[in-house]
Length: 266
Image (cartoon, rainbow, N blue to C red; front, side):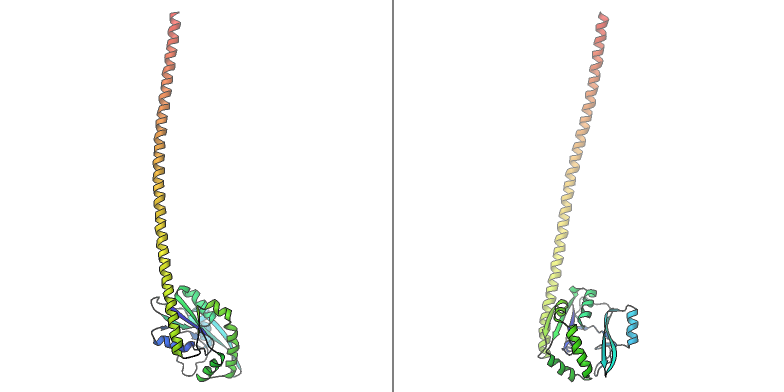
């Protein structure tokens, strides 16, 4: 099952991702054209590409989904790309990935909703800013832009439309991870039960199909037998009609002979 983590900037989704990977989840690393932040590693948080490289991937249809952010860095306008490259997934393994709502929606459509669990991580605004300042490379202009964009991009109705659950992250990461795992395992169990129910329904449908086919075959046999019986009756009736015509002809010949004999006697 693939766990998709969504949330506003500094909500704790990336920290939760690292905890899940530490516990055995396989990370799905997205790609971006934004500058690498302090302490980030290429291929761990993201695959970092230049804007030109990212646009080339778009042209070559190498992305499951992608989106752009128009931003200001140091007062200068810039456009950042984020996206997920096309790849294969093992359905017997658990994965984790961080996406926004648009990316999550596209990813679920590509992979299939039965293989995904989409979780929205929510946190108080004051806590968000404190965490953003503590992680390094804090830019006030960029932060204000993100706060405004997040309010639009993570509107409540969109969260409810895309995500399977909402988890609050106002305390420790351990509390968040425990709550997440309980919810994830419950959802995974429900999905498994749903698959088993579907398989049972398919088996029942196949069994009913064969019962119907068997009934049709039995009906066909009866109809075929009835047709054969009818054919036999028709043949017998034909023979009777022929015999009747033969007798009528013999009788007519006899009557004609008797009439000729009477005329001779006269």
